[in-house]
Amino acid sequence: MSTHITGVRTVSIPVDDQDAALRFYVDTLGFAVLRDTPTPNGGRWIELSPAENSVIVTLEPARSDVSRGAIGIRFTTDDIDAAHSALVGRGVDADEILRWPGVPAMFAFRDPDGNAFSITELA
Image 1 (cartoon, helix red, strand yellow):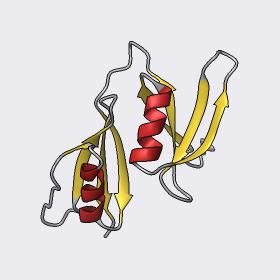
Image 2: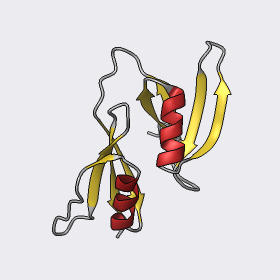
Image 3: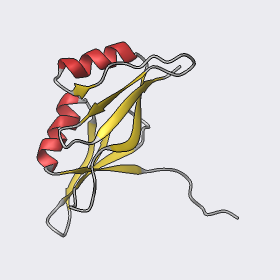
Image 4: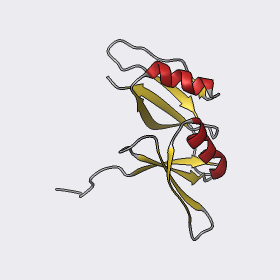
């Protein structure tokens, strides 16, 4: 039986300050702004993308009942060492690169709101 679900359009990231988060994701991580539109409730709908033809992330105002931490988003890179150096060089809170046998190299990092992500090197 088909549910007619055909993919993932966006992944939402809870943030305390949309302006500060937008600066981090665009200026520090290099994401492109796809949409930044006012909403009728006085907020904003912000869509970003790390690359062409990629899943879109949205920066949504955090709610008090939303906990922070690992949200299970793994970004990808062709060069884990260059990605790690670039983020650390920009002051991003990033862990060391994990290099486990048989597993793609990866490292975790956090945004200023405390949301945790990882970057995995493509084979």
